[in-house]
Image (cartoon, rainbow, N blue to C red; front, side, top):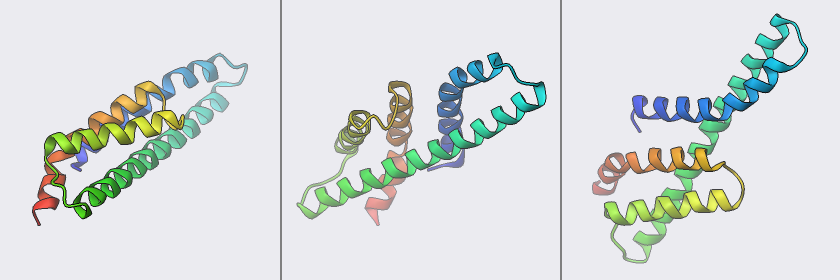
Length: 122
């Protein structure tokens, strides 16, 4: 995954998730310094969660690719995108991600096709 692509994904996921939480923190009866510290901690936590989520989803896609290869199947872009959709749907069913986050996750994983294609060609 390219750094720009990963960075864009993380920023988007972080922004979407943090927006509601920040509003709640800002409305809480705390001093400015305490509020800023709370926001900083929340941002770090969400960033870590977004990174972990992507890594988990990526590993699951890779596992499914290996299953298809072992069964003698070929992985093309269409099959890859179908596997990504399966993984994202599984994450949504497990309530691991919100609808917004799952959409961003799917977009990022689909954007990884070029990298996956290179790896499959080796």
